[in-house]
Length: 467
Image 1 (tube, rainbow, N blue to C red):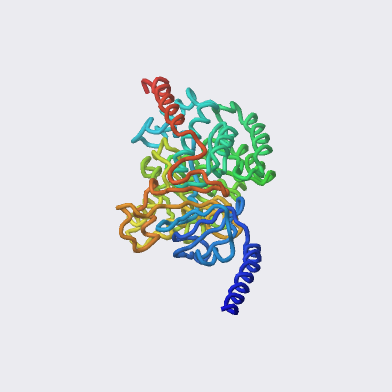
Image 2 (image 1 turned 90 degrees about the horizontal axis):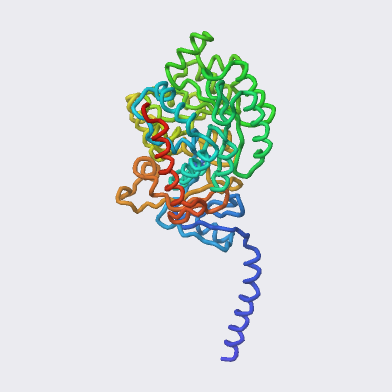
């Protein structure tokens, strides 16, 4: 009996001695998300059942099975994702965030009529810094709720957009729109360029905000000014965002004026390079696609907006096949009319099957890639975001999978692209910070934003009465 007591005592002493060593050997993480199906979108496209993601500060430190992560890491906060899917945050490669306040103002019109008769006049009468701030809050609310963690924007008062976006905790590439007629903020091109110098100096190097220059389009900006914008992009090492080949009227205008396609013209003046994010790209010629690939231009495909404005169907399968990085964008809520990337994924897959008459074109995994890792390539941030990998920014979402519309589940990619809705997103982390937890937004006052948006609706209605 005495011998047995001694043995038990020695075992307990060994446990007490080893436990601190084991604890100190475990690496520290701030948050561990475990138990869910982890859809990594990494190079191997690993899907890890009962997986886990360890996060320290703003970075992912490890991705693996729950058992692997538990053996190596400990964290003060554990998030149980059992029965759910953990995946990279979605990337909206093209929008105009403050235009969420113009949602539904004018519909069922051709692009140029929509712009010239309704949008430009409404902007001239209503857009100021306060409008932009409230519109950005509304857009960020919608995007966070739908699991969008990064967006690309081009609009006016972009410094205010950056300020509100950073407050909301959202990642963004933000381009101040420059155009060859008086804009709501900068009344001349030269004033706009001065604004750009201050804007880039303020935001470059920010953890969430990437400043960019955004000449509107080849038909609204002169050759001289396009060249100036490109030189600015090169000098400061910032992205250049521009609408290209969006509409047949644009293509016709550029052909008549410069005897070239929009892409060929921009290439001729030296604008196309690895910093460019070209929005829409509905009407590139076959040679244009080769040019886009060779110049490493990223493309933002906006299927729903292009469909609604009858702008045409972008040759996305051909662009992807040529090696062009094509991401998904919503465009602004005035022409879509939402900022829902789940709908864009579903639409992109089905639209290109229809037009190609090939049901294998843009399969579910490819559609999800366009909203994550390929979208990150399109905006030239794939080294930082777009997949769940150690060393990348901790931008991820947790999606509930218990909805009746998601039952039963056979294939995770199919379920995410063809069945899942924005409302199924439960938790959103951006740069290691939880900005939505179990459906509750933590960074924006939702009720205040809704009330102000309705106030703006009444004001805008009066301003455009008679149009």
